[in-house]
Image (cartoon, rainbow, N blue to C red):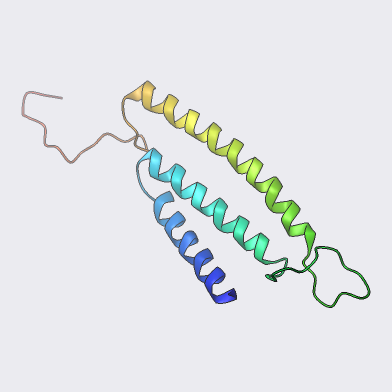
Length: 118
């Protein structure tokens, strides 16, 4: 089970980094969301991956899960949702202001200009 979770974290991180390096706004937003999901799963997995174990440490319990990563993940979910909403609004405002969704705000040079245009 640990190998599956570690592989999922690695795949989400790789896909998130790939999308963050794109030149359009929407893939960058999706990449940031994937990176936050990967961090959330990593934090959640750091509290032990056991099934049916109580989240409270007692003297008579041999297996338990740490409740602190669960609380951190719940907080991180709320913060990432708010961050995503803010970034979407900033991206939408930039798109409506310039009619282009390039992240670097450079003009598209792939189309050749005719001789009379500047």
